[in-house]
Image (cartoon, rainbow, N blue to C red):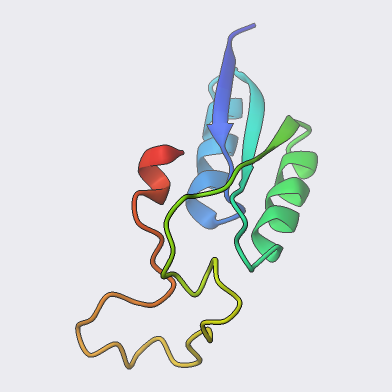
Length: 101
């Protein structure tokens, strides 16, 4: 059986990718990243999705060297209304996060 590595964030896109790979006949190993984000809900959701799909998962923990994101820094308040960005980069933006993944 073919094996696929799926980067599983707990969101809709990665869950769809996991189920698509399984439908195509792949045995899937899910990588879940813990990069110090404040929303541990992402990790819990990813674990539940992997378990529901009967797929193995591994949580990979690492630190990002840069600062300035409210997603990583508890001293920066999280935005309550995402619609009021005024064309600015949101405070939750983590530079190069997906590139590193």
